[in-house]
Every structure is written in structure tokens, then in C-alpha cells.
Image (cartoon, rainbow, N blue to C red; front, side, top):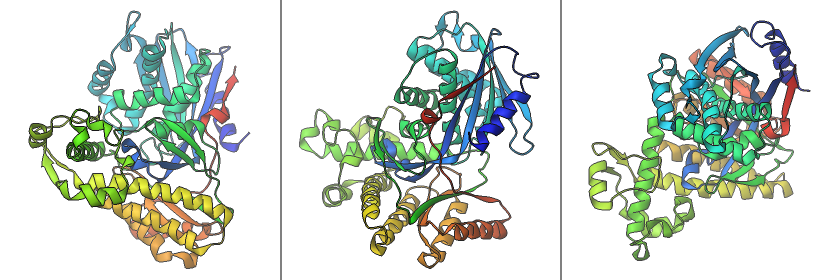
Length: 470
């Protein structure tokens, strides 16, 4: 049993008198946070995604309780003491035997004074798992539960700790009530919680990584359809690290939402230029920009895309978009060419990186391969720059990695987080750990803000299973 598991089980034991009721079973689950190696910010357009499950994780302990409320207690990251974070009456989620609509849940959450912080938003997601199981699996919970949470990193960090929280919650909750669901089904239910209740753009790929991850193996996934394509073992001479800085209090999801709408607009504009798309625009590239090759895009479509277009002008000329999560605001202007270009090229970069990783296992010391792997990460970072605001701390960390370069064993880096989260994925020689820590230390010295290195990996929630305590 790992040290972090022992630590959490000890916390559960300490809480058995003050929080948990005696003589009733407690189910414990664990889900890892993750590092988006490449493709994660383009998953909604069908891009290939490569992501690594990290050693940092979220633990959840759930004890069914006859009291009709969900009481959530959270361990404080600094003091390691637990505090009551949120209590949600069960009748908030259901009117009698009928669960409320997802939109009603969102309204209740928004009206709560505790939902104004990203950290609290994800805690509401814990209750959202109950509602998703009520609506999607027709479950009826005759009582509430007591929930204890411990996260190695803040839930609003760019390592998807919030994603890990939902995955660990559904794993523990289904085990506590004897519900049998596949890892993929649980991941899809978590996606419903995030998208339809919390307003988060996360696709199912992120939940699959937290659920199905294999230690030290980047996973290959696609969001549409939600598919796990396998894993890519790293050659012994290469390693991945994350460097994370303290997240801001609020992650700006609106930027990602606007880019998503702009990309969908671009798809519709390009599809309308194709004769066979007159009746069904999605028939051109099966509905996803990732099915367009960069050369095809450059030759036929790049020139017809506007840099920006107003919502009202687009609706008048082209009608609607096919992305169900996107709502066009008539008075708003949307970037079109840059998000489309990024998405198409990011998928190509992800596919190229996956192919080169496979080749590097056969030719582990080929300098041309390692150079190309690193350059793909740098290009991904600059590509994201062209269509979105990159956190300044992530920019600085990437610049420090680039300055250190291959002479210090570092080949490439990219911003791996959305919004204001400063998380950077770093690829280098397996013996370059000291150089990575030196970059984190230099960043701290320059800015006065802490930066911490994420240097290890761990398996997903499915491999951990659950632990039952009494």
C-alpha cells in the first residue's frame, strides 16, 4: 500500500469519532491527477489526446448515512486538519422520487454563496454525481452520506484535481451502494456532471485518464467517440515532468468557450463551401475538425475563414453550429481562423508525437527523434498562444526550459493547463530531474511564487479499486 493511501486511511480513522458514524462501512477510492502532454485543449474537435496520470491524487471516503443530506468534509492542504466544507440536503436533488433537472441543479448551485469559488464549484460536483446516477441509472438513495475528501493539489489547479475528485467520488459511491458500472460508463457520467451541472468544458477523455490510467504510460484517447486507444510506454532514456504554480482563484472558462464556438463557426463556414454539405454540413469531416489534414486545410479552406465574426452576422449568414455546448451571443465577436488552425494542427502534432514516441522505443538514442518530440511541444505552446491567453507563469517556465535546452537534458515544454492555471509539461532525459527542479527554483526566486515539480506517475481509479473500512 502506498504512503499516500496510508496517510488518507489514517485520516479516515481519525475522523471516525468526530465525523463518521461507528459500525457502518466506509468506502475509499482514489483517482490520480493528470498531465496533459498534448491535444487536451483540442479534444472537443476530435483531436488525439496524450495524457499521463500523476502520482498526486484525490482520495474520497463515503459512508452512507440515514440522515437525508450529503455532508462534505475536506482536509485542508496546509494544516492537514479537516473542516466541514459543504452540506447539501438530499431534497435539493430530488422532488420526492423524481430527480431535478440538471439546469435546476445549476440554478441552485449558482444561488448558493458557497459556489462562487472554483474550489467550492468542484465540491458541488460531488453532489452532482448523486444526481447523475439518479437520472442516468435511475438510482434512488434512501439516505444521504458523509464524504471526506483529501487532495494533494488545489481542486482548481491545472492538473485536473477536480476531474480526479469526480472520478474518485463515483468510484466510491457506486461501490458503497453495490452499483456495477464499467470505467467508461463512470467516466461519461462524470462528464455529464462537469458539462451540464458545473459548466466545465472538460471532455470525457480527462475522466478516462483518471479512471483507466497506467503508471508511467501516457494514454492515447479521443473524445468523439469516447475511446481509449491504448498507452505508450516511455523509453527508459526519456521522462515527463510537470511544473505547477499556484492557481488563481478563478479559472477563466469563458475564453475556452469562445474558442470552442469560434471553431464550430469555422467548421460550418468551411462545410458550407463544400457542395455535398448543403443538406448535412457534418457529413464533410464526420463533424470534427481533427478529420481535416493540415495540407487540405491550407490549400482549400484557410483563405475563406475570417479572423473574427460577430454572432449576429454569423447566424444571419450560416445559421447555427453543431456544438451542443456552444451558445452564440449575437452581440459578441468570435475569433474563427485561429482556433480552427490550432485545432487542426494540434491533432497533427499529437499524432506525430505519438508516432515518434513509438519510434523512440525502438531507437531510444536517436537525437533526431528527441529533437522532434521536443519541437512538437514547443510548437503546441506557440500554437495555443496564437488563439488564447497563456498564463504568464506558464510562458516563463517554457522559456526557462527552452533556455536550458538539450545540454541540460531538456527537449521541450508546453502549457498544459487552460485558463489562468500555470502548469507546464516538460519532456527530457530521464536523468534531468535536477535541471527541472532548478527551473522551478529559479522561477520561485524571480517571482516570489512557489512552483512545484510533479515527477512521478500512478495508476487510475479502476486499478486502485476501493477499500472498505469499518
